[in-house]
Image (cartoon, rainbow, N blue to C red):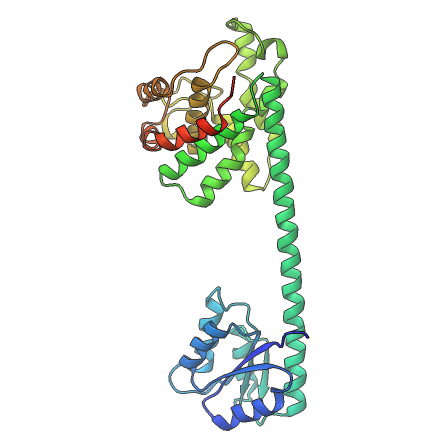
Length: 340
């Protein structure tokens, strides 16, 4: 059996509430309030599917109650029908401007009340169904976009002869550092999901350079230094906040606090803070894990270098935040470290 819609009726005259009860009790789940203040609390408590609201009440009148409910995200979407003896066109216009969906004048006509209530509940159900469908589709699009980002990030690791665990570790390091630095949970989560794209530009660098065992010559190094700009071009311009972050990170994670980095020689706070965070995470991971050209460093040695480079390579404020989470960094390294 389908669940009944909840309707809240607010009127300071009990006889009006009794009429509403007699007309609607068989079809709907009803709640009542005899003042604006009581109606406000009842709306929060019951979260009705529709509200029938008188205008002329002592204290918090119907207009004030409607305005309050429409300003609160918890109750903003509840359809409100004014049921009032105020029958002038100006009165009706004011009620609709406040956000009501309909206006019924007293004395109450049973057929009109029943028809209007049924119509607006049907519209309310339809709107909720559309909102749920949009929310589900948005979630699916976000998930698909995230999977593409993760796979492109993984593709760059194949090119660079690194393990897929690198992007897992440095993404965790980035999020932990962001939270330690006081960045919001939402921003830190988006950083976590965008960080895997930091080296996607290496897809455009020849394998002979990426996989060279010895040091690069000047010509090879000039090509290697193009990968941030190539990454930004691959990601492109997009309205998605996630892809915006990914592009910023790809372009700026090799900039240095003292201005000696690349590709744009940015210094200090000219460098986007997410690029500064990923720079820390990326270098730390490169130090603590084995590469074709080096053995893994002990964690304490890597932390010492990070500290020494505060104010030159790295943002000194972020370095302090990074040091605070050393035990969390170790947990990530232990869990996803390369087992070789």
